[in-house]
Image 1: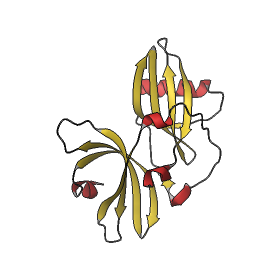
Image 2 (image 1 turned 90 degrees about the vertical axis):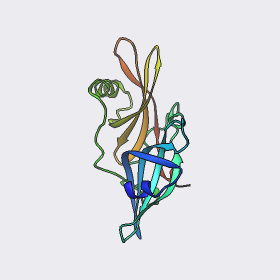
Image 3 (image 1 turned 45 degrees about the horizontal axis):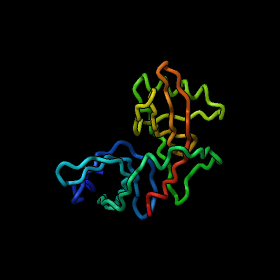
Image 4 (image 1 turned 60 degrees about the vertical axis):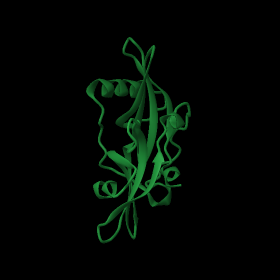
Amino acid sequence: MDQANADYDGMSFIPVLKLATQVVAGTNTMYLAYGTPAIPDTESSLKVVTVYKDLSGNSSILNIADFNISDYVNDASLPTNDQEHLAGGWHVCDEMTSLLDEPTASLFAQATEASNEGNHYQAICVLGTQVVDGTNYSILAKLDSQLYVVTMYADLQGNASFTSECAIDLTEFTK
């Protein structure tokens, strides 16, 4: 990612985590990253950046796509399969570990226990929060070999529950 980032003009990327890999004549790697345009006073936004590393070790950015959290809220798409690999040969990275702070991890565990669906997601990171009468959290999570955006609501009394769960189709970020 560092080499590809250095060679890319107009925007810089700070990778948050490696999402998936795809073996081709070399390797494609998909990252969740904060992208900041080179234009002064512009805001960073979440991006999915696909980097190609050829067989000689040279890296370049193949694709950049916006990651809009709102695309994954209010959709009750729940797990429907236990596929080991995603479409297009993409493999979700197994080494992802939780980046949640302890209070958020505790709320996530409480919401998991309260869930009627019985899905035990592995929380990876908070994508965003929204302060309402309590707090909404958009959390990137993994279930088996599938990535999800799980929306969790924590009320002012410290009770937490899931309000939406939506699968992420990584092939949507390659178009």
